[in-house]
Amino acid sequence: MNLPEDALGPLQRKDGDPTFDEAWQAQSLAIADMLIDAGVVTATGWAEALGAELKSAAQAGAADNADTYYLAVLRAVEKLLRHIEIIGRDELDARVEAWRQAYLNTPHGKPVELRAAPE
Image 1: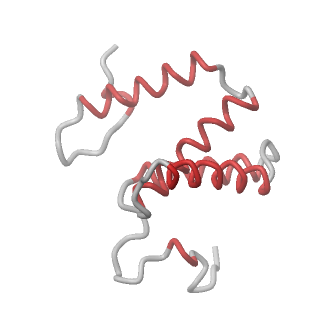
Image 2 (image 1 turned 180 degrees about the horizontal axis):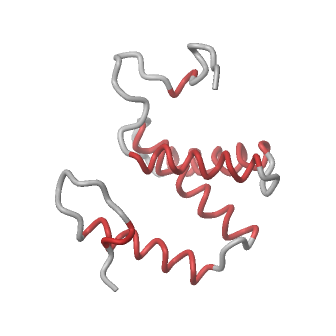
């Protein structure tokens, strides 16, 4: 892919650090992009969902930083998936819990993988 040097715009770090602190941050944005590319969600619908989550975080007093932004991305993706019923609430909740268990059972410093969740 031949992107211009400033293609990442506001997501690009100015201090030379990686754009994403954690793989899940990139994955969350990739899921949103995939939903838009597949025509499941419009770009406007995504922007509205993300904007609503960012506004909610700001109203709750969350810090204006990358952690807050990517948590808003994750929440927006989850809400869109529930709203468009691509995945049922029970299935999504089970998947979230499986990831939580995988995280809790992954040794510090190792990448979290879903298969690390106990059966």
